[in-house]
Length: 127
Image 1 (spheres, one colour):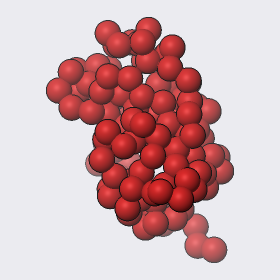
Image 2 (cartoon, one colour):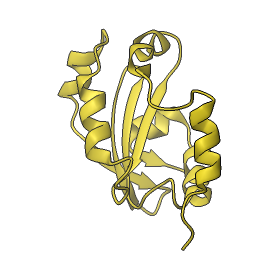
Image 3 (cartoon, rainbow, N blue to C red):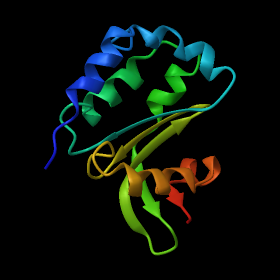
Image 4 (cartoon, one colour):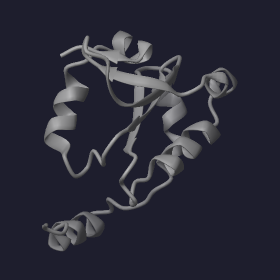
């Protein structure tokens, strides 16, 4: 086990990269491009419950439609292996991934980047 590098963390902090009210920018971004919010179900720092609550509370024109959508199984490839849950409406998608994506980013990034948005919205990814 290796902890996060606090020198790097401090350098980000001193450059102004810390908690900011970026949620105010998301509605404008949603008008132009798709937005994906994801969190691992075992990650206590970026927990999925807080991210889901944030996504459902976000003020944007599609909020009512988004909040009517239920989480559904997120499956990987044709074998139906369940890797999490997904909820999507319009340009906004929330994903709960099993295991913390920040800690095993190599495998999760491969899974995320080899999928099309259409497949993601349907709840199945193909590699």
